Image (cartoon, rainbow, N blue to C red; front, side):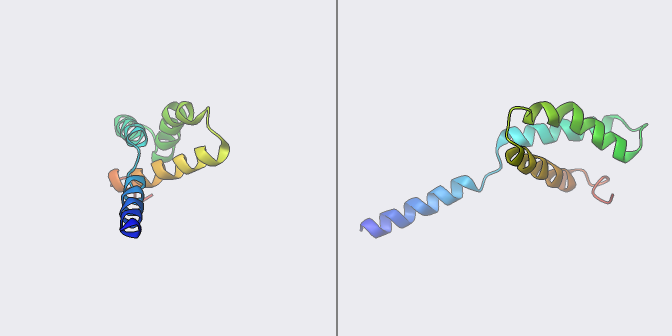
Length: 88
């Protein structure tokens, strides 16, 4: 019985950790909106400006490894949500 309870507890814990934090999703949405609003600039400039304006303040108090992980998460999330920018 204890083994079954331990196994179910571990499954629950792994399931809880597989969710994307909502703060990263909200930053991604803000960045995506910023990229879509600045249509007069080239794509690479739009992405860079949005990252500097919104992602840099978000990760300024984190360690380098944590900020790199958040950068990767936002970058890959943007490729899923911003179809017109996923090709570049």
